[in-house]
Image (cartoon, rainbow, N blue to C red; front, side, top):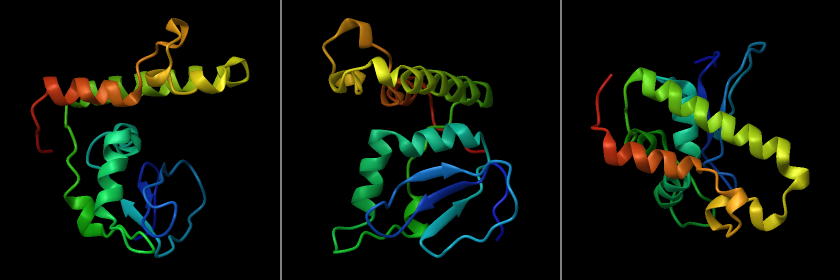
Length: 147
């Protein structure tokens, strides 16, 4: 299957297992066997940010095993719990996370290392909601839905 715009790519073998990216506009390319390709039914950006969340990354680490070389199988991705708020909520959440990440990216030179992780920072000026806190809110307020 050839990757296309808005597909999700997940590293499935090795030290970077669980690293996630979204396919942007690009020339056709081939996916190596150490990368899984997911074709989301909902918002690609929402799914990408969910897969990058600390909770989901911990799930992926557990699913990929504790052998010498981690390996995430396509079957493992089918069992990853994914909250499914409405399409409008997915887009809103994805936009909010993107805005927060943009703020952090543009502020990096001015931040001290302790402020790079707002959830651990005691400085009130760093109190931005983390992607994980946004997804916790979804899990507690939304019921799972099928597409």
